[in-house]
Image (tube, rainbow, N blue to C red):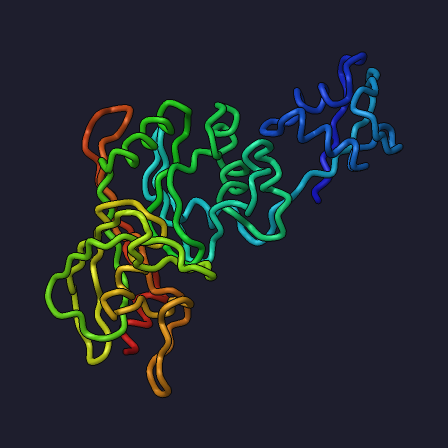
Amino acid sequence: MAKKILIVETGGARLDWFLAKSLVGYSRTFLKGLIEGGHVSVGGKAVARADARVADADRVTVALPELAGLSDADFESWVLFEDKRLIVLNKPSGLLMHPLGSSWLTSPEAARSESEPNLAALLQVHRPAILKAGTPRCGIVHRLDRPTSGVLLVAKDPEVYEALCADFKDRAVDKTYRALVRGRLEGPARVDAPIGRDPGHRRIVVTSLGKAAETAFKAVSKKKAATLVEAKPLTGRTHQIRAHLAHLGHPVMGDPEFDKPAAGEPRAPRLMLHAYRIAFEHPASGRPALFTAEPPKDFVAFWKSL
């Protein structure tokens, strides 16, 4: 927790109201929780009542959630493009999109209380105007799994958020992924097979009881026992690419659900899946936009090692 000290200029206000006016990016509900949790003191004494009144020249100390391990430079290095309405990021592998559960949706500041960095919290810290504008989900329009790296769109205001969500729903956003898969994928392939949860398991698999899903694949480069594949999901199901490649007999290397290398076969350090390119119509300008995120160093190094 990081301590923030505030000096009351005009007294008489409720403590939670004073904090909400003084601290950008925090809702009154969240601040009320901090007060009741014993994280706020006035004049050196803890105050646990949100309706307590502050007086002129009171010294208010607040212990605020703090994110560790990522600096401004880290976040800014992920920005591929930014204007007044939109951010395009190159998400690093290992970064969680948002906390599990739904509490952060009603109280976004809760994302900052997590023990590890997540994108929802980082956007609040590095782009507080997104939350201040009332943008749902801190502007996160679509998601990538924690181990997946690559290009990601973030809306900076509610209008762009709604427009992009509609485009994803209408399949008007063209996404291209790169994956390192086990074995040699011969020629282009197109998988049109429903996917759903494997009964008794969390993983997503091809199943007749699932939802319609379609993915196009082509080999970009081949090695003795692995292929660099380009994947274009034509539908937007969760874990679609992973499930369809496993169905083809060429699981993504490092996939904890499907990739089971035999003794002596190379083992990937993580899921070797990367969101490589995205094309869409910019909601504000109406112009076509295309952004590419080159695969990260660990992805390239593992491919070279094979």
